[in-house]
Image 1 (cartoon, rainbow, N blue to C red):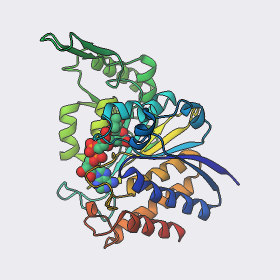
Image 2: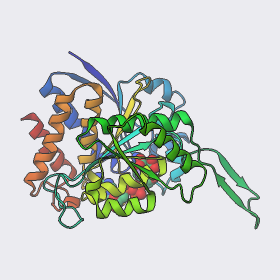
Image 3: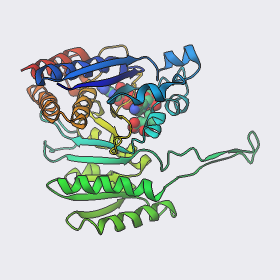
Image 4: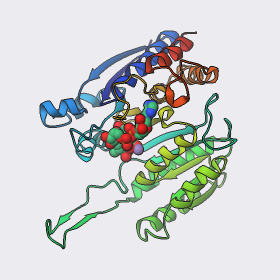
Length: 357
Ligand code: NAD
Ligand code: IPM
Ligand code: MN
């Protein structure tokens, strides 16, 4: 039987609280479906590690992590201790870049039992993917500060788009759209205001669309696209976006499905030259950390995405269907963001026992 080697990095805040529930679901699914998971936990990519070592990651992190089949990640960031750009550029963003995880796949789905904040919306009305470019774009290290401390103080950060980088994310999104029932791809743009990079993005979308005549393609500027996520979430099927636009859309989408606490993501290297990384969309939530009330569903659903990626589709589906049936049943086990009175552990246990069958 197969045994998958998983690197588990919990990180900061509620990352440490939801990780055990993600691992519980993962191990339960492995037992039930007859494969092994060998989990190695790492304490780096956290504020505690930074305080002790003066850096977020050990020097040998790349060699250490590259040998795993996948990385299971919680959340990083503790801004009272380490500035966010230091902790994030020192850890998660390094993983995404060095492991060439150029796809950030973020499903947005209204699950049964959850009331959408959008009036009258039911499961089925909101069911799409945000496909976010994950290695370039607005998240660049090109730029700098000049004339510091003077009236001429100037800061510049350039957006980087490469043909390879843009085409590969578009191709992934078109391929995904092609496999779905609606076969509909929406591109997020802003080519009216951002007059160099975004017209280029539109141009590449048009060129790629020519090879996918079976996929209906449209585009919206990011401002009205945000409005349409709220007003017409049923319009969307696969939404492809640059790094920053995809970041924004992937909190807005899940908010429209009740809570960002349920949203999962896959930071995927489709070429499989390096491990992919699976993590909830949310962060370390300092405002609720330490209370045991964080919603573990985003972490658990990320375990399902990881198993899908590793080639265990039945186990992946079982985790997702356990999430759905526990949410549909409702009641006290649900966490507060879902209207319940439960804890991270009570919801995680309910899902694990449903996977167990
Ligand atoms: P956040 O996602 O941590 O929290 C935003 C809000 O959503 C908070 O009110 C929080 O309590 C709530 N929330 C988030 N996850 C929840 C869950 N599972 N259950 C219930 N409620 C939940 O975003 P933020 O406050 O902007 O960021 C906090 C820290 O996390 C920062 O350091 C930020 O840089 C970092 N961050 C990390 C990641 C990541 O590791 N991928 C993602 C986003 C933010
Ligand atoms: C996310 C997060 C990160 C991002 C931050 C923490 C750098 O918001 O995974 O969505 O912007 O990519
Ligand atoms: Mn984000």
